[in-house]
Length: 148
Image (cartoon, rainbow, N blue to C red; front, top):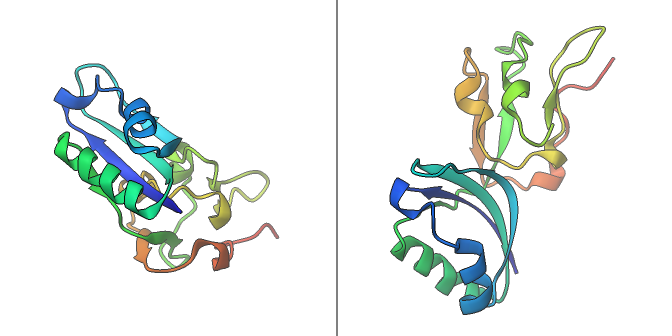
């Protein structure tokens, strides 16, 4: 089974060997999709965890016991084209390249299949045109706007 979660590390927990302990103690593989963690500062890591359902449940319980906050919200990023002005700020913070703009039109492009749902784009949008929509399968979401 596979789960995508966002781990929020408090300052006290950034030095812990989290992925190593998940593998050794819980038989759970962790694929790091995005990480922003610095010594003596809080941090965030988006991971896909792979393992048996009981092992995943135990691993998540252990992570919370280590002081990490887990975001398990299942959803997808959506862009409201009526509000978007193609400023491109969101594309500058997108770690996967799911949001981009290119000449000659410089119109915002969104490739949902590349999106990590890390939610970094949401606070970057000055017009609040980007939102997390809960409970929607990622594979079925079309691109918001295609090149024309």
